[in-house]
Image (cartoon, rainbow over all chains, first blue to last red; front, top):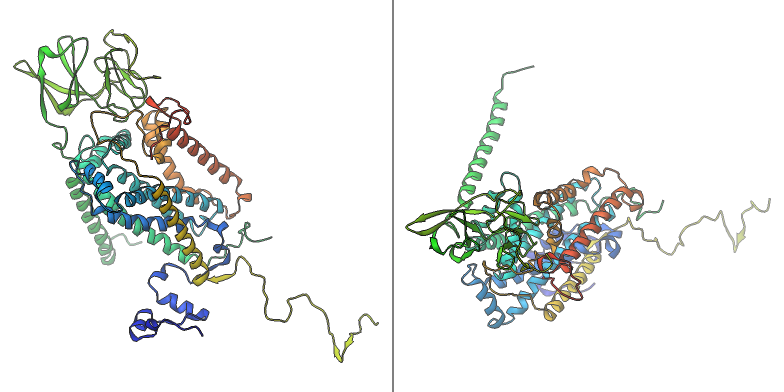
Amino acid sequence: MRRQSPFRESTIGRSIFRSTERETTRDRAAGHWASFLLHVYPVKVRRRELGFRYSWYLGVISAVLLISLVVSGVYLMFFYVPSPASAYGDIQSLHTDVAFGQFIRNTHRWAAHLMVIAVAAHAARVFYRGAYKPPREFNWVVGVVLLLLTLLLSFTGYLLPWDQLAYWAVTVGTSMADFVPIFGDVIRETLLGGTQVGSETLLRFYVLHVAVLPLLAFGVLMIHLWRWRKDSMLDIANDEEFVDE
Amino acid sequence: MKHEIGRRQFLARGWKLGALLVGAAGAWTSWDVLRSRAEAGLGGVVRAARVDEVPAESTIYIRAAQTYLTRHEDEVIALWQRCPHLGCRVAWCESSGQFECPCHGSTFNRIGEYRSGPSPTGLQPFGVGVVEDEVEVDTGAVGRGPPPGAETIDEPVRGPTCIEGA
Amino acid sequence: MSEHEPAVHEGRRVLGVVPGTPPVGERKVPEDQDLVMVWPHLLVRHAVVAIATLLAVLVVSLLFDAPLRDLANPFETPNPEKAPWYFAALQELLSHFHPLVAGVLVPTAVIVGMAALPYLDRSLYTSPRFRKVAVWTFTLFLTIWFVLTIIGFAFRGPNWSWVWPWQEWHGEL
């Protein structure tokens, strides 16, 4: 039998991990059961779900990108004040004065773009595989909400550097709200906190970007994963793509 | 069969109604807190220029009010620089004698009436007042742009446009 | 008679021959529907995918710097003015249709349509072979959206006029 780490075998280790053996299937299931991080996963999945062809791993890729965005985003928050007077300068000094500042900002920017692509591609792959079919309809709807949240997160983040690209892209983007019947003006002016993009807008987008939307996204993601976990044992009888007639 | 509401049913409905009221109060409060405040950004009255500075054949730009001033039949008109299509800044083009939007190429005549492009209306006017020969622009009072239609001034495009390809 | 008589080999009688796996353990051919442990089979794959994803982000971030244009200036609109690339399709539509259609109705229809998809398409088949209508509709939508995005992102120049991206580049990320 393989030796477990001494820490896991110790009193404290046992109190944390509960189940320390990892040899038999039963051990692994028990370890799974006792682990907070692993409880996101089901204990068993259908074998077809392991392969690249099943999902192209796009869901995992999206989740990994989301986590990397949270990490790099928190780092960026230490060097950024959301006001028109300082935002642009903060980004500039991030590039020049902060160790790895430019790199972290690059990471945040490119991971955000990649995440939009990954989430959209995930939706497309799920569609083509027919994985939204009963009884999994509702998880598809939750996924659509996550796609929207991803777009909103990316869009609110777009304003924060307060450069020409940001200012006018957000001006144009929010002007579309004007054409919503009846409430158009009110919606746009509430989004902007004024008649045009200004300091109030920057603050609002910042709060949405770093607090409101990420919390919402994580909450909805938990529902998404929980539903996936519950459905992992489903045996789709007429799944013609994977079962020979 | 029973038509009167029983105690359990009354309580069940009461709870739901209470929750609804609390929710509505919360929504109203949040709305009241978060809706835009008029004083943010533009919104004040800007003392713009002397009346005799406002040209009749051209426009002058008032940066503080983001406004173009021009004259039409002895009346001063203030036009907001914001394109009614998607909010880009519309520029006055001296060579063509019209307003031209860089984003999607909408054009407007000198007094802001719609000429071409995807904009749904003409330029939005601000309220204007004249106090002791000084033009005051009230940027808090944005009017509706005139709907597309026949232009009321006869000033055709007088030369090359400032935007290529439009 | 002799055909039906069981053969005798080395003192043992063969009662019959049945198809099956050899008696050296249960060597079952793995099926797609079999249940496998997430730990380690799925976790190992996810770990590899996670590392590959992070590596890709790392390499891209080292090679390309995030753009930072001039300080925001409300008095000057850049020409062309581009929305983020994921809204390029919408922006392209907005240059052709009334904003109420392109800016409100189309996005709303796309969102509602996507959310309602599982309730509209009630067939239980999952293979594309048996869902031709759904697959073709979705593919058509995806293609149109993709083409509009590419056009809006790369093929539009000053005043939203047509440019060839290899002659003038106006895409912004």
